[in-house]
Amino acid sequence: MSPEQFIKQLPQNITEVLDLLPQEVVFAFFLEEQGWQLHRMGAQVYVGPVTEDPKDCEFHCSREVFMQIISGALKPARAFLDGRLRLQGDLGLALHLQRVLVA
Image 1 (spheres, rainbow, N blue to C red):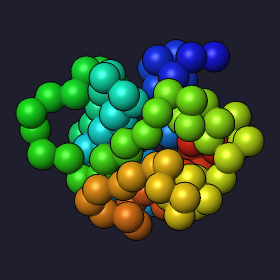
Image 2: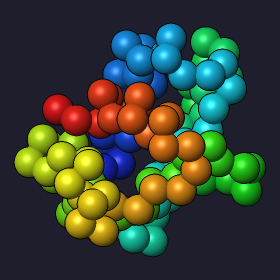
Image 3: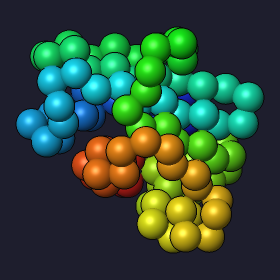
């Protein structure tokens, strides 16, 4: 599975953590030159290209690191501590979303 395929499937996979997230929240994933955005608006979840709207939490890493995280080969906390994953914004939100990202 590619990062693009994984991110496009997030609306179906995120239902288990929706009750932990605010009604209005925006996550952005920046993998090298590509960026995707997950925007929750109540019961609706939008996934698409990054927009100029403010983000609550941003994930920055290489495609390789992202694939290692979603496959379970690399823990997000380890990637963060090693400097391979950079987070901006609300780290608490990132912890909630971690449940969906890790296989």
